[in-house]
Image 1 (spheres, helix red, strand yellow):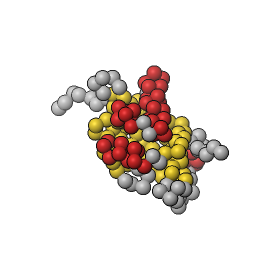
Image 2: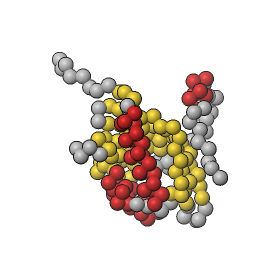
Image 3: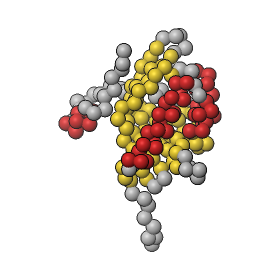
Image 4: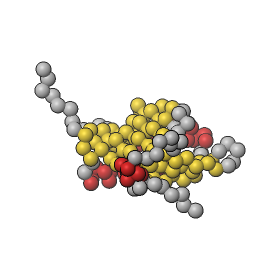
Length: 159
């Protein structure tokens, strides 16, 4: 029987949390500026990125998508939770994306995001996974616990 114990899931300490949030801000800024070289540096070669409609891209496909579509007009994040399992960070929280559409209209997508980053050999944190679940229909009323947790996660659109 093995005595190896896998690392525990813990909330990130202040220093690591600040590092992860800075990487997320770099990602957000680079998407808005269509800064493909910065995104290339932030995304791990193993990246799996699933957009709100369910389209899934690897790193090369996502970089092409960003460069070609240039769709991001604004990205607003709500409070983010950062948990660690060893050298892997799992970040969860709300997002509001303002996006351009092929017909020139603007669309807004709100939802919940799960992002996974790993600390690489060079010490940098890189994204390995992104999954957005857009807000949808709620057929059951929120439980007391759900109402309490949602109170701190609402993102209001500015303007």
